[in-house]
Amino acid sequence: MSLILSIDFEDMAHDMKRDLGLWETGPIRADALWQSYHDIDAFLRAHGGATGQKATFFCTGVIAEQEPDLIARIAADGHEIACHYHFHDRMDGQDITIVDRMLGRAKAALEDASGVTVRGFRAPQFRIDRTEPSQYRTVIRYFDYDSSFPAADREEVAAFRAAMDLGDFPILPIYRGQIMGQNFRLGGSYLKLFPGAMARRSIAAAEAAGFAPHIYLHPYEFTANGSYRLSSRERRPLGMPRALYWGVRQEQWHRAGNRSLPTKLAYLIGRDGLAGRLDDLVPTIKA
Image (cartoon, rainbow, N blue to C red; front, side, top):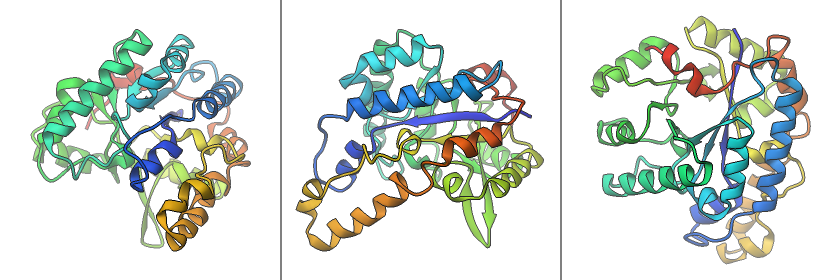
């Protein structure tokens, strides 16, 4: 079975400053995002195979508002534009009125920029409220499918859908496995730091669990030049201990395993290529 590849297309520098309380919002790093997109698109053209040269980009709305030409370019190149919320905020702690407003704002910005209907959604950090259904039902009002649910098997997805009374709303999970008792997801830093053979076993486990194997990545993982890092000057208002801590933590995201990622990803894709855009697969998605 061919791999699915999606990109959580976000500006980590902007989002990290928001998470750390350094600003509410500000300029995105447009040059870095453009370069990341060119690198990702070139990789897909070289390694995606006959059907997998197109992928799904879950984009934050703030990028569409500040750099609409980039979203337009991604869409014009044939990739799917999907929604990754407006800001890269954890939804699970937010009031439903904020969720509704941010979903509507993001969808409108992405559609205005791309000129296409945005069908898919993924919550930032996969953090959407799963204790009661109001946030998911709001997602259903705006979108045709969701990819915010890490799960170990299809039965878990079916049980969740029934418990939340989501009907037949399509959910495309990210596989959640375990290594030495610790949960991991098939993508992001986990994929960068795993040996290729371990990642391949995880892909096989996802297939055995009844999932179409799905890898997710981010723009900053396709570069090792630190273009999304927060500088020491930007971190200074945090105070010395926190500024040092977050300086070290950034190494995981912006350096460790980044240079080898394209080679590892090409190895995992293999001869079969990628499966293409998620919206093309929606009719096949089941519990």
